[in-house]
Length: 282
Image 1 (cartoon, rainbow, N blue to C red):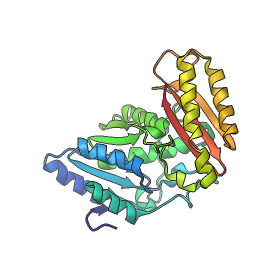
Image 2 (image 1 turned 180 degrees about the vertical axis):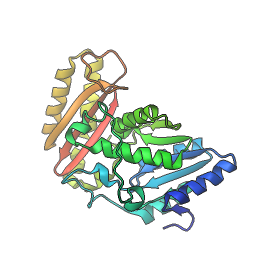
Image 3 (image 1 turned 30 degrees about the vertical axis):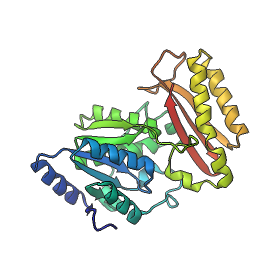
């Protein structure tokens, strides 16, 4: 762990540090992560540093958003390297609690966002967004920052967080930040580390399929035909399973019958044992 980056392990430590910042009249930004940081995360940290006087980055691999058979144990971790990188960027605090700190014995309360949390990712990963909504609600209330920064790469998550913050009157601005991509279009993700060489070569096909879908829909093509064509493109590219390719309203994520603007195309597909997600504006 870097000596240059203060680290809080307990909520009381986090709140004490933020209280000192508040007393000094400083604005506070929060960047929630599960660690294994990459350039996508770093872009959020930079945005926060540019916008706020103080930046706190959280590292917590949340067990409540992993379902049975998912990759909790294998999920990449590297706190020491993450701390060094965050110190180099200029972050001011890392909050890295243990599971028992976030979910003390006897903790039973959960936060769910019906509708938004039930479609798409929620359909294929039951309970996932309840886990996300619960931990994000806790982090927002633990820190009570002026703003919290989330990547658009996890677009449905961003929509869920905006909804819960509004519904629960949490006084935090939720800031969405653009997807960061490799030169070939692949969205940066901690799970990209799971791809072997052949799978990595095939992976950019997901972005291309979504781009083609958006172009077709903008051009007046029927949405069902456009998404079916994208499905076929991914299978030909070597994807072993396509969970969904969908065009949805950009705010509510409700299904779109006909493109009339303000839409998003989202996709999730498997390369071997690795599940990739991506999205872009239509």
